[in-house]
Picture 1 (spheres, rainbow, N blue to C red):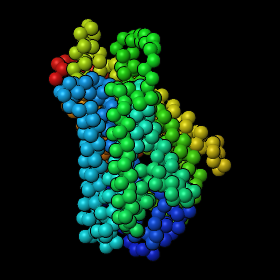
Picture 2: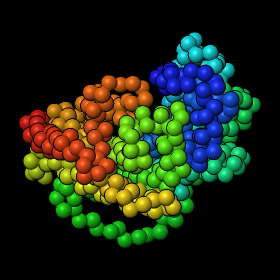
Picture 3: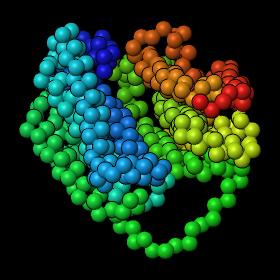
Picture 4: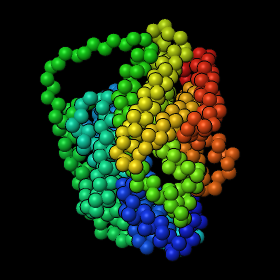
Length: 501
């Protein structure tokens, strides 16, 4: 939020210089599906709303939804909910606590975004106070609306392993509704999708506080409906659960790896669906974006800077694979970090009591993360190929480029799996360090070129070493693979020499 307005103004210092970009983006279905409709005349504030508003709203909603699932329905499946109820609180209190906590998170994101833009307005004239405040309000409402919508859908779900998957699927459906509404010019549909509420409020264009009030009323009404329906739901059950007697399927857990696979199966499936949707969707947009990256004007120059190459279409395929690889890496690291949760919850004590070696619990999640990551990369490749097949302009060489770009990212994925294992092997309290390293690498890979980072800093990000053909340099990828394997072994050795905190 801080860097983007200044970087954008460096490329387009005047309103007249932005007209080429505005015309290209306004008529391009790919960018409209990704970011929405860009407002005219194209002030810095409007472009910030168009691009950064899409990212902040989406990523903030993902975070808010995941936290809300953990705080409410997730606590019922782990036994924490029973402990809370045993203190004598009312059954409605956990739901109310989740809603208030989610509102706090959403407000912090919205307020922080507004304060950043208010600070930027001191240096950039067309980033005004009214638009900054409207932008913050839109972020807050998008995040909180996504939480309420996902929790309403989760009222129908009983299976504990499906909670996160269904919640994220609800968010994906919300994104698809928003994309369809903007591409097909059906503005009323944006009212049905929390991710479309940014377009409803239109910061830096209409700054419609009347609609902010209506959307807030919708959120409060949804929360009231959620509370009313939740009161009719049995503990740890879905609203429509008939409670018919069923025979419990016997699960055979074959060793520590089988246990880790069983505990992470829901997340593995959920991430596979997310990777497939992302890869297929972005690749299906490649035909419309090809015209932009090949352009001779400033817009084409920006795309070439972002992609860091002259073979722009091949580089764009590689860029999509890099985005997918970042998602795969986040998923793989989250699997490794499930061991840290086991140590904090002391369930690892039960596992070790069976006589396994000290490093076995971490080794189990490492094996599951590695196999799952391989499967996710297969999904990334297959869904990407399906997306390319939808484009009339696709040629056989594009599929070859996709294969090289997809599998060369395995070096970055293995590197971060190893880094997460090594850090957890030393101490589970160091999990935050892995996320900081991953976040820095992702930002550098996605925006390093356009922000003018030096080449050595960009090359330090594992995600930037994408191969698009057999002639690409393979040395960095092999080095990342080796570093990931060595780090994994070192992490297992470290875990065998320490006690559970």
